[in-house]
Image (cartoon, rainbow, N blue to C red; front, side, top):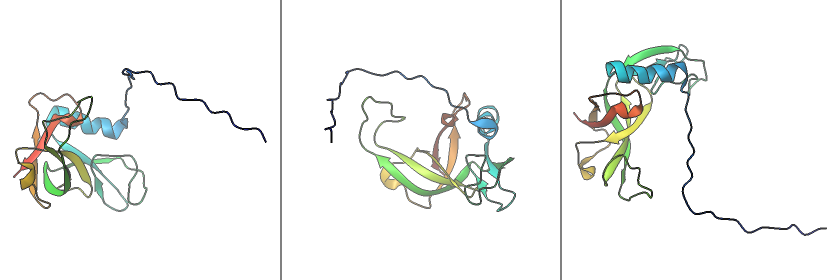
Length: 153
């Protein structure tokens, strides 16, 4: 049996630029359009199990049915869980100064959670079950960062 030849890895220091584009489909595109144009959050309602999923997707995560019925949900909701970031990434592309928090927010009218930044509150004051509302940017661009963060109600 022949012995397998191995090679040492070749490491090239530096940064790699990989431009890419995401296609979100009709439902995802409408979700971002509603954020940008109307500062409204939409979900998609399953005709079979009646669950409302945010952000919208084309297949139900509960019953795997095809989805296409967009519905508006509230910009207010409840923190289901959260995490606080205390360290700096390298290279830094953080959305806020440390420490900052991400939460899973179940919006009123939705059956799933939306992951987003929590703001206007010290990280040690955040609690599960806390009521929050979306704060939108003044000039929206059609992406998830049109919601700056969720703040306590």
